[in-house]
Image (tube, rainbow, N blue to C red; front, side, top):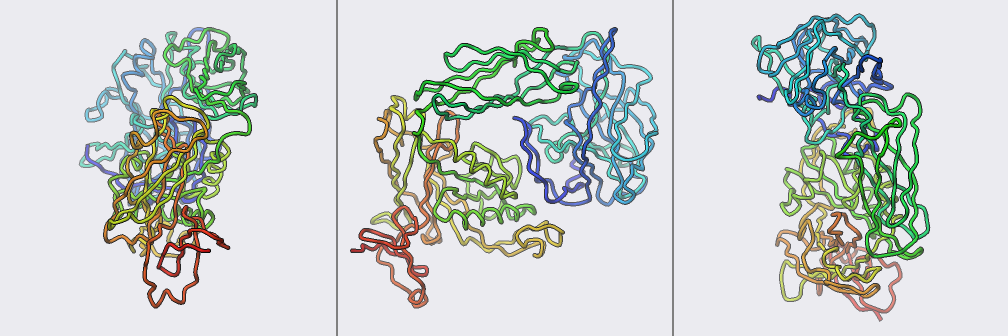
Length: 632
């Protein structure tokens, strides 16, 4: 289908960061355009129950979050919204009836009230064909953000495996109508919940915008005596990956109600390693968890035996509202922990890989954060890497890192925790959380110009591990990265220009800014790590080395390059630990006239600045000239 609305919407600036349940990450990168309004306190009414049959509200969307409007819209212009009742969903509810259509009204950017009153509700098996069912509906409620239930004059039977579309068509009363109410949630590869149409030449032209705004807050009421019930799935299970023997550790479980009735109680079974499983009943507050809604359980566990081998943690839902859980495929989930002796483990360094681009108008917020990291962590600890996507600084060796992104700007800490790079406090909180977890391995790095070769950097990594491991090469690998400072200048798109926000001064800059970039991702040896870079077996506490040369372009100054080593966990894909060399020393460089008057700085061979160097080998930097010197 033809793309019709490439930039029809806007996103409110200064979005807050959300802690989302697994598989539900919030989108923060939609293009800037028109006006939006955030919905606060909106809650979809719960299902209504009766003895003869059950009626439940169904919607693929989460709770309403934001109302949006069309750019340059004309009064009287006709639009439509629809969601797909997929074949899988139809099979799940086969034999029951769709008895009502539900939707949220929006607002008007000028009046503050919904001004659209007249809608045509429709059902169709194909958006390109004429609907098989239509019904006129007039909104009688006043105000904005109201939940409407349109009872169908003739209920529609649900047939197994047969998808259909439900939606509404309407005309704008004003260019300022914000008629699109969305959940603003990333639903992954599911695009069923966001079809938007525009009438052109008397025909509806459709586009899907699920990857930009999430799902439309549309739904239906399903009534019948064949609805699934007492059905709860485990949507995700996570636990602190490294714990200390005999000390409590935290775990989280995400649950999804897939049954018609609200979930009020759960029977759960939880086991850790070879401990006896624990069983108990959990009771939710209030009316419980409605259909298709998530809930999160948090708790603490304990294990007493230190071991290099992963310890399984399993969570199972056995009962729902006192009856057996009818969920068969996702009734349980497992993860694992490593249990260490208290007081052991290595200090962790954290890498933040930020996805950014010169074309991205919200990326200046990420630039501000990454520059703050450079200033606050000059000697490592939190290591910045700026991975550019589809711009002049894109490096092909980083394509798999860029593919992790749910949008731009976005960032990952140690490829384990997603954070919004426009919020420095969120980044720091994530850093502190990961740093508090002991590392099972340590890695150190030296980097210097390769001897007898031009445009090459010789890197040497030294690793050690907490435990003896006979399968170390299967569990861990090394990867080397180079980043570069002083790249550009290139023009950075800036959506914050003239906005009433504080974004490190970018709000005072124009919409396109000549910018010089730092910590730009230059080279990555491999995303998954270098095979054989860790010995097949290791002895706990013993040091092992691995070294190689990395090529750089003749146009890149070695003085602008940083070297990073990742110690990768091959089972999880996360960065177990890392190290960085900020200054890669050249030898026998000649001081330029401008350098002669510059202050002298000394660094150790790991690139850490030394204020009062004593006897030994150091890196000496004066201006742009770097040399290796021995002090005695």
